[in-house]
Length: 121
Image (tube, rainbow, N blue to C red; front, side, top):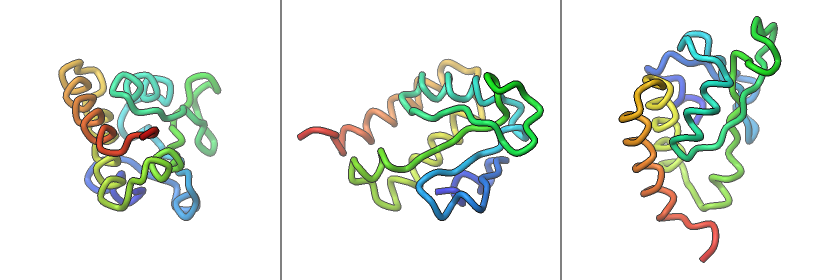
């Protein structure tokens, strides 16, 4: 997933974190704070957390990064393809975070994807 987030999307996932179920993504190249990314991704029905990056220049309640975890995806039964789709949906929001139409378009795709993998059956 970290590779998918990085490819062509002007983002950097911490390589040390990618072997785990969580990754830290530096948003400075995107010109968006962790606080804003958390909010806009939430509007698109994706839950991530703002998180400080090493030597973060932002205040702790703002941050320059986000922490993205995969446990909810595995709980739903997502496999590699769904992880790639999710990574691209995250990147789509972060590529144009201030466009309500973009966020709505991603939210529709997120809802369609998650409907295929309900938490409760």
